[in-house]
Image (cartoon, rainbow, N blue to C red; front, side, top):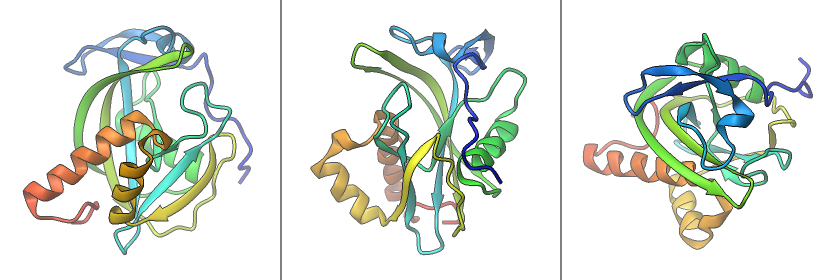
Length: 190
C-alpha cells in the first residue's frame, strides 16, 4: 500500500446541500471553502479502541484549513455521485488504511472561518466505530495519530481548546452530552 499518494484534490466536486441535506448542485472543494464557504455535505468519523479511547489525528500542515490541528479520526466529504457509505469507506482506507463498520450518530450544520484563508460551511454527518488497528497513516492527510481517553481529551480541550478543530470540539461536546443523557459510554458499541 502506498501511504504517500495524494487522495484529496482541490478540484474534486463536492455536493452542495440545503439545511435538510437535499442536493442543490456541485462545486469544487477549493471553491466550497473560499470566503464564508458554501454549504456542502461532509462527515466525521470517531474511531474508538476496545478500551474506549478515541483515535485522534493531527491534520497535515499542508491542509488549507486547520493544518496542524488535532481533530477526530477521519473527516472529509462525499464527492459527486458518492453515498455516505461509499465516501466514508473510501476515506477510512485513504487516511488510515482500514475498513470497519460505522454507526451513524447525528447530523449538524456549522460554519467556521479560518483566519483570512477560507471557511468550513458544512452539513456534517457524524459516525463512530471500534477498531484497534493496525493503522497505515497517509502522511499527505495526517501528520500524527494517538489514542486518548475521553477524560484526558476533556481535560486537554478545556486547557487548550485552540489546538483542536472547531468541528471536532462541537462534535465531541454533542457526543458527550448524548452519553450523559443515555447513560452510555461514548463509543460505537455502547
